[in-house]
Length: 233
Length: 290
Image (cartoon, rainbow over all chains, first blue to last red; front, side, top):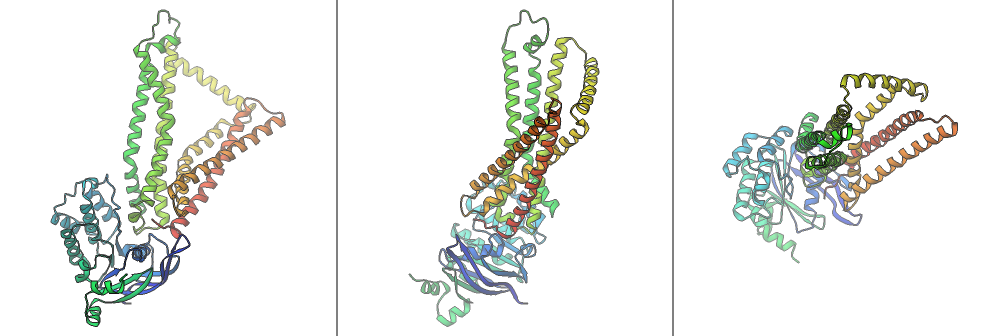
């Protein structure tokens, strides 16, 4: 089986009215970095949350490595949400121990190595870190796992360009080559060079799923330029 | 995985739990020292002539008042903390980590309940020992005022207790032993029940589209009100049936209490079990983090 994620007739409705994700069918392969792109409110985060298991689909189903979302899938999915789940009172050391306790694929050495590279003191409490540093710590925790699937929701939003470079380098250098990375972002120019495939979403619908090279060859444009054309107001 | 969950859940409570125990120990000690003030000695001795209320007595009274305030709010404050801690780890931003751990939702809930119940039990136990220390302190003041030895008091108390046990059996139809067993079971199970009701209510709040925390608190208050109502109704029916049967006596009240405690415990257990099942079902099928 080459598919890592399979979304079948996936829909999500909020408040019985607003259709955030509308009947999406998608199969994503292993070993690719895939960009989940779309304007605000297109359903990117909703899809990611459903794959991670923090949101329940209204209709349809999700398979990760052939398993429905549950204990087995969560053991193989490394998820970076679009918010901080670290508590202010805990130290980075404590969070690393927490991850090491629960995720068999978590590498403590790798986490400390990355922290050292970034000159972040692991004995510091989370509340003493800047917003950008918190995001970096969270990314380090996620990328220190040897997961089958990395889901990164807006990993470069809200950080300076230098930090963006670091984050993207961290993703490329640390992800398991057998695994896939699903990156949701609207900062396309910054991520374009690392992507193998892209998914375009609009109003909860899947607009396009294709290889980045295909866009370049077929339309003679960068992903960013083509995105602007597709989503022009 | 349950062991690991429990370890981390206990860690998240340890700080506040230990602080509660320290506060309880200090206030108990302070209250016990308050009994050393001249006022208490004067109150229970025959030679109170010439006693003047001084600063030591004022501090003593403050110590006792402070103790009773602390003791009366401690359990409630701790339960509120447990509710806050549960909500934060399950349904706030931290939930994005909690619900993506490779553990089943039922284990997640079980671990939260066990850690909360263990600490509630410890706090209750500490309160019981604190009450015991205060009672011993009061008796000590009375005995020293009356010039009585502890040995003599204990001998008299044992005799009175034996009489009480006998009278309660013959007149009240209640075995003190079985009454204590009911109280013991109540003491053991009440931490689990109170924690499940709190956590279950907060989980029920997650079914709302907005203001989920507020709705969780509303659910909690509603369930507490329902339990109180049921308890009053049971107590009323029990007392009324004794009055109408013409068997009522002071000793019969014990039987009344035992009956009310037993039925209330069973009702609370049923509600806790239902809430537990519903909570796990919500966690499995309905969880939608904002």
